[in-house]
View (cartoon, rainbow, N blue to C red):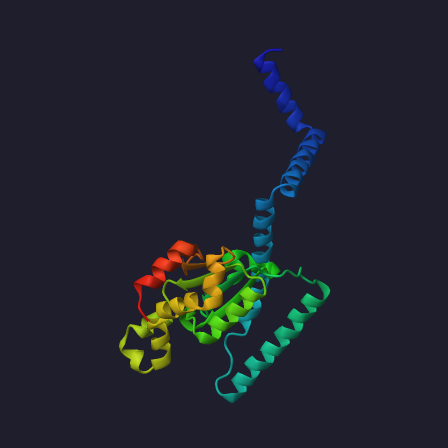
Length: 244
């Protein structure tokens, strides 16, 4: 059969409804097989479904942005919050999520633009998350993380992020107005050093049972880059450079 005859034969096949149906079914089966055995595809498709869910809910929030001013408007916002909680609890009741014991703990800023679900795909509650103003790790949070390590956490990620309002305040003339916030930001590295120096935490790191890292989040796209890792050697060097 010549090349011309082959091309004509394929054109005739494509015109056939049965062939097009067979081709579509083949493509769908191939796609399902690929998705079934590809973990990256599972994770990516899961993220797509999550964002589709957000899109469904976005218009609901936008409809309620313009509340009345004053006390009556605040009560309407509170009622809306309770209503949404009831709706969300029904979803959880009839569509329960998987339960896991986290091995990783995250410290993030309370900035609403930092979405831990999108940041690390945390829809399955795979991570402990502590949120503070400016990602400040004060003694209270240090004890919380130490308790988490006792419970099995093996990696702690201490994040900060670009375009942080708390950092801007700490480096502006408003620092005198927000004394505690500014102090927390300015002493952030010292607090990290104090945390790493805690006997239980430092011993865990020395034994190779715990890794602590510092990471920066790009607020615009959620990309997280690790810029410091604390293991046995780096921990000794880090603490040795700063005197108490």
